[in-house]
Image (cartoon, rainbow, N blue to C red):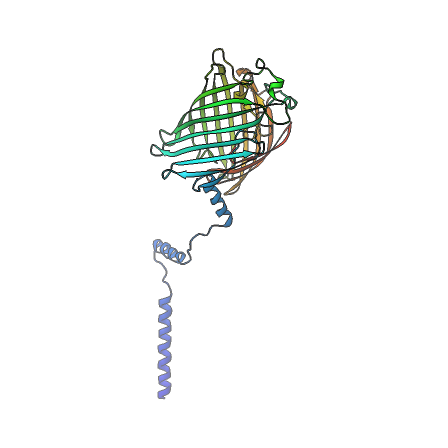
Length: 404
């Protein structure tokens, strides 16, 4: 009997201990919403760990640091010396002279043997982040630029080439008085144009035209160019945006040292990005008109005329395809976000050049359409590829900057 009693006592003690342990292990139900939230946060904290970026995200970050954020010293550089030079390959060396200010030495060489060497000083956070300053100087050698005649009705068979060498230097200061929306920009640069003998299969302009029929032919001239811009810019970044817009006017003054080719020019530009479906789709629109005025007894040379054609405006036509005293360009894109780093786009471009300002209407527009793909960061376009179709064929555009 004593053994049975002892066994009963042990059993009762074990049951009581197990019940107490279970009661202690069981988390009581929270009495309030605050307690429930705190309990959920405590449980979630047990499974937290540092975020591990994917291979694609690491690659995009490296490209952004090299091309956009400018945090690496040696970096690739794909900008061409001049539009129309084809694919360009180059490199740069960047040196920080203060926490935000940098000096960048860079150069490139293109498939058409265009050569570029330049240095730039950038100060992006002046006046308590209200201003940006850029000082740049360099030299370019351009071996063959197409000239097809004046107007929008010229033929591809009329192409003639000119070439030039150009040392240049200047600076631009951008200022936001209220830090947002309203912006002002001013700048001045000096460039020396020296026309040289071109390369390529097309004939030289000097064998097709004379100085009387083509102003600027054979010229060696030095321009002092000043400009001023006022506008309203609501975009997050001009290099990549999915909402907001830009509306501005830019005035240019080109003063020729020899008083032969001086003129003035005004550009009117409007850009608007319209987000749809939480920015999964974006309708992007752009319009820009350029008009020129001659100074007394002077003319606009062939190399300074407003022009259309190339990877940033009429993409279905060759670079510098149309030239004249005035120009009008209209562009529309339907941009579709595939993921956070990649967009596709359907686009349509239309434009014309004219000898008279009153002829900048919607009659006789040259147009193209096409499809594009863009790799980007939240604030900059890293690489852009467009396929454009026009009545003059299909053209392929490779660029490291947005269209607009």
